[in-house]
Image (cartoon, rainbow, N blue to C red; front, side):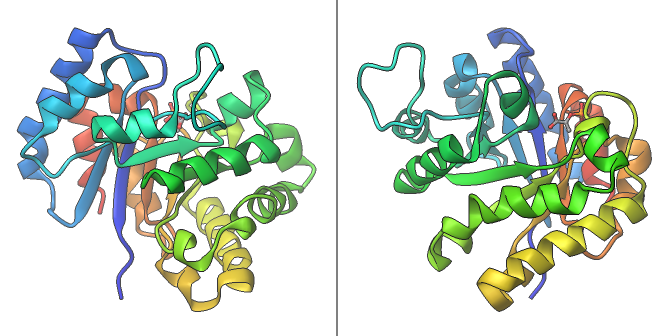
Length: 251
Ligand code: PEP
């Protein structure tokens, strides 16, 4: 069975509500030019999730949040619960993005709680893993990704794992203009799948593993052509509908 092909846009802390709505509108308008086999997901800031969901209604474009709270509800000022995100109509939530790990102290412990919240509310996590430059240069990238998977993904049930999406995002390639080569991406994606296989067996073959890190229209096709690369998690290039859609044409 062929794995799902996914192109997900992580808008990060960009776009005001009106700009986000315009961006979503343009993605919907151009979507028909890209193979139906590509599953597009947009992940705007919390503030305009509802408006973007409204805007993509009637299309096959799904919407995701960029994070969720570790707790279900209560006295957690500033947090946004998975149930709130799900109630809006979101289908996905990005968890463990390197910017959350690096700037906001995200750990495997908090991510285990967030994963549980996501699944309890019917959201599909897009779980991010990846090494920083120092770790890559020391040859520790395999060990880093393995630990990030073992400490979190290994705690999922088989049923939960069946809907998981993983994004491999080398931190040194995020927003830097440096992209992993297609060979580097394939090498580590195949390794990640092997780590998943060790726990979940044949179900690992069905798990979409996305590449993220300065992916753009000019390099997407080469990267997506690799056997274990099932699409991309796109930052900067997701902020222009034309580029985001062109990346989808990379399949
Ligand atoms: C990201 O942060 O998820 C990302 C891949 O960013 P960029 O495409 O801008 O490198």
